[in-house]
Image 1 (cartoon, rainbow, N blue to C red):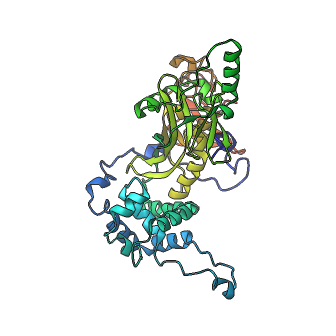
Image 2 (cartoon, rainbow, N blue to C red; image 1 turned 30 degrees about the vertical axis):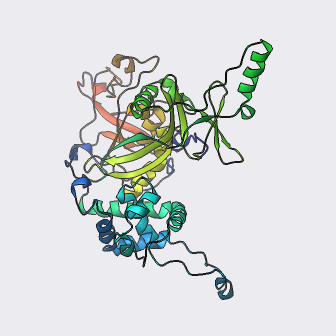
Image 3 (tube, helix red, strand yellow; image 1 turned 60 degrees about the vertical axis):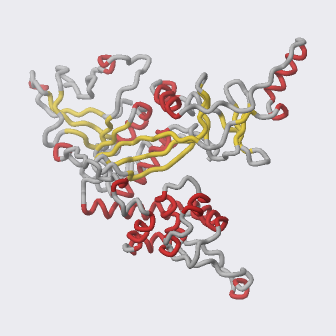
Length: 442
């Protein structure tokens, strides 16, 4: 997770089937859809059975099509491929029990740490429900949970099966979604590197001694920014054209890898070196408001149910839109179809994301960002379409109508997205014919 920018959105904005012949799936008409939202549909805090990890695991086990599939995909064995005489030297057999179910119980308990969960739930029936004869040792639990982190694809696959099951009963699941993330902070601190590891401090000290002045060492740690501060700074930073063109957010510190002790190193804009014992978090530094060491968590959330359909967590020095392609693929694998529309915030309203959705026939609901040459609504007008995205007649420049039968979004024979429309006024004979315009202006 050290690399902070991958450019995956730009590389994946054109679908793999682009330019290839094949069956063209008809795009769902927006006229036949209505945005609905079930209030408190996933407010599990009021459901005593769902918020109880024991009852949750029991209910999950009642559905073997999901629980057994998860067991097969996450089972960890150490004797595969070994001869019988080699297996005899492996020591005592592993403790019987379902570690995947225990991980579900741990997450459902909302306990902040494995050690706290191990102590609090000492006399709970959760161990027996997960198939254990006795409570495992804390170190054993920690070891198996680390092993399960490598089996994340198995959990993701079962999640997709659960969403598919829900969609069979309610076809509106996943039709309208919104894509958003929330920041989280690590418990670790960001420290300034010692003098021998920071070349910039060495230069400053040498210059001070040469000038006969006393060198003042920087603080040992960077102040931690409040959650409200880094969230407001993150949103303000996203509303800039620079954020769209840079490799990483402007405030992100550049990661330079791990040292011999496993500490993660960063370099700030003044070439000072910092380190943290957290090898997976990223850093953003805000002048006067401290630093944010942590990451972002979120993804696609269903508008109807308010439930997460495809989600992930990543470093703070990565951009949200850079993870859009992989989470979109997870969303489609979960629902079996492209969404009709996706709502995004201003930080994700970048050109590549609009093109990504448009090429797949997905509507994008987003606020406009302020660009250097487009600061008002009228600045978005062109000869081909107005500031609202409505096409203009190529003959009289009148408003185009695209919400009738056989009109609207479609793909041409090269699989490029286009809009078919007719002139609303039909002022001249040339205006009466059906016209089309490309959705990609370049």
